[in-house]
Amino acid sequence: MHRTCPETERETYFSGRPIPLPPTIFCPECGGPCEVQVEEWEADTGIPTLGGFRLLCRAEEVEFAAALQEERDPAWEHRHFQSDWQPAISAAFACLKEHVRIRQKGGELYAQSSKNR
Image (cartoon, rainbow, N blue to C red):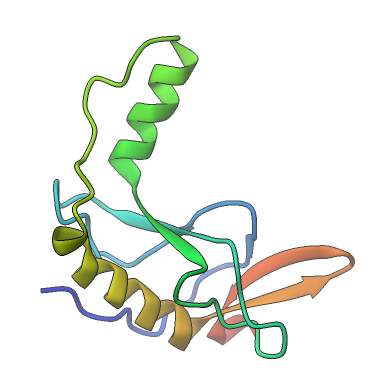
């Protein structure tokens, strides 16, 4: 069962990079760590939108990057069935809504935990 993330002491992440999620939110296919790629947020609040992020399995992303670097097909990949992934997606959104804000600083966008706001 996925639980929403607890308050954390996260550093500030550049918005173009994936944001790691706590271990309570894990890949439903391999049980590995997950991260999110935030692509859309509310302009006034900085809160990521429900449809504005992608939930990523870190192990799958590593395999894709290695395959690309080695110019080969990935050795494996997840199925990404909505029925399997929806609990993790819902938990990730609850975590983002509660703890992550997108802010602009000096022309650059940053994703921050709520403790660093």
